[in-house]
Image (cartoon, rainbow, N blue to C red):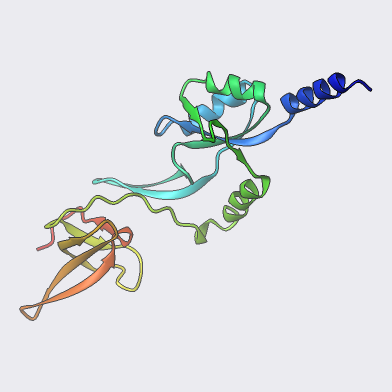
Length: 185
């Protein structure tokens, strides 16, 4: 067989080769992007997890993306081009200026994690400032209500507990806290 024919066959195989890729989406559009990609017959994986959202007036259980603003596609080079022309898709994750291939086992890891969602926890960014009322929602101090008196970096706060006219300081990771809706007396 001629060497040029072999090279052409290899190029043709690579064009038709399907791999997993990660698409970066506009915030909070992952489910809509998933539907649009499915309409284009592109295989999509959007790992979702049940979470409880708390508003000032209510709590609601919803399905949120495990990795916000990302969706995975199993696609050929041609399908990548079609997916990038989808409303809500901003870009594809790249490595060395080429679309970054996500390994099959990494996708399988996500699927395995979601088989036991009670053990998976999403840590939303928490923006708590000094002086704000907070409640501990994880760890040994769950249920503790206090005031943030000092913020140590991005990961911890020191909260004040007034008891017996004394201040007791407790170091609590920021991800263990949520803003308290009602004011602490």
